[in-house]
Image 1 (cartoon, one colour):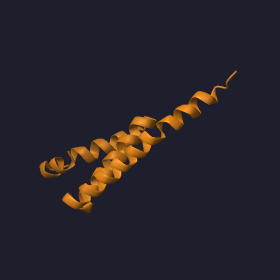
Image 2 (cartoon, one colour):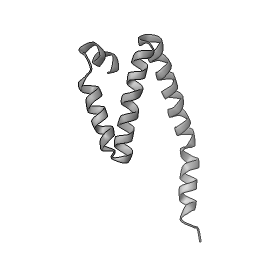
Image 3 (cartoon, rainbow, N blue to C red):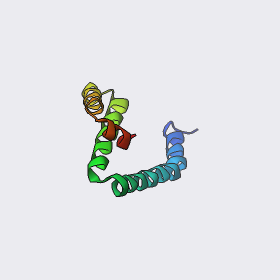
Image 4 (tube, rainbow, N blue to C red):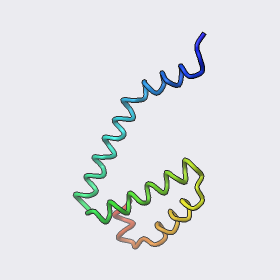
Length: 83
């Protein structure tokens, strides 16, 4: 007989290489944004990303308001840089 924790631990082990790949790709993307667009654009993208994650994971209404306010305040040029 197995415990309920066994499948979860097994799944975590199986997903570890995927999570590591995702982290690597995220770092590479961040480095590329910094190199191509600068630190200010990277910081903006990071602020948007973190607010979106908080809203999605926690249904955080303040994160949604922050996300909406940030996106609504973007100029056309900033929007193109972020997208």
